[in-house]
Image (cartoon, rainbow, N blue to C red):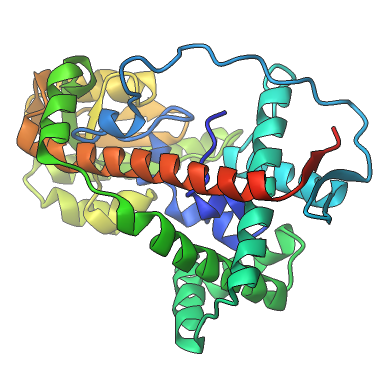
Length: 358
């Protein structure tokens, strides 16, 4: 597990900020395969690794099945088992699945290193006597709340992570202070040269290939799993009505806003571009078989009945440098920040006393 020291949402894993609301998930969920993500120009750069990076990291030290009450000490400050286990649970919640036995040692060791790093950063913040203004804290709390569609969803996330509002407020204050310190120590020192951006693009042509993709809109009439035949018939009849209007020339976006049960209805059913392998088979086959501005027959999927209209098709192509450059710069900047932050944390660790007890 590559340590993401600059990702405070991971370091502050007990914080509600780490809990993504269901409403923020891709609106393509009603047609997409589990785990699929929308294709984006140059997105490969964000996940790329520099040439020469070791492909296989060394195996982590095994984590014992039974954990002690304290898993580590940082300058005399305990990291208790309950905090460690809560953080693991939050990692699993964000991933949507439990940590597999094969990944247990790697994930657990990575989480523990993140918690140690956070302790060191918190202690350094206290040593420097940094403060956060009420305005800074209020702005951070506002940004956190905006991740949730409703106040009820926000409170539900707090409850799920066994955290009170005051605890969240204190965690957020810590996040603001650590961010302020890292801005001074790390971010202000980061600079990416234009030659680094162009060099990365030239040395990694395979990372900037876009597969064939189609941009489509749809109207989804959902059918609950295990629905009775009468309910399925009623849903199909509704889809037939939509199809008839679409083929008669009705505004497809308006039809989606009126009839669709998918979250994409707010965008007139527009799903954006997607490559093969992202949508469920029936939906994908229909979409890629259509010509631009053509409307499909009714397509049945595990989610219900779809009426699909293709907006545009895009052949396989290389992402042009002008389009990839901002993402490359972001990736290289993040890489520098991670390296500098790790070096900063390592300095704090070398000056202090860290005992790993598992």
